[in-house]
Length: 73
Image (cartoon, rainbow, N blue to C red; front, side, top):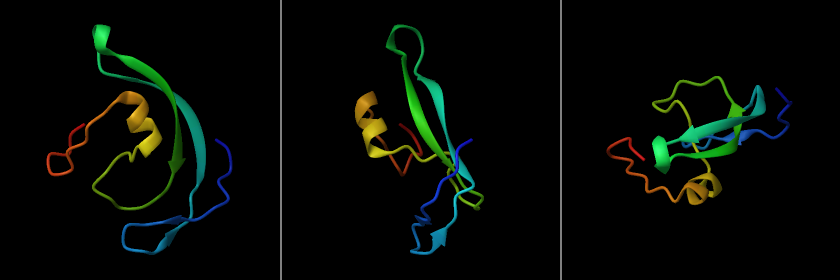
């Protein structure tokens, strides 16, 4: 884990201090449709509905379509 110096602005406008960040290899999908990417994760200690927030560049690399009401990608 590497240090993360910048605070993060939450959805409600308050600042959250990150515990650090880490690059991890992730595989999305399965079989012939799978794709592996190294994704930078910023680790925070907050209560949220989400386990992970993926950045727009990561979603673009995956060609992903996100449905927020369905909590699905």
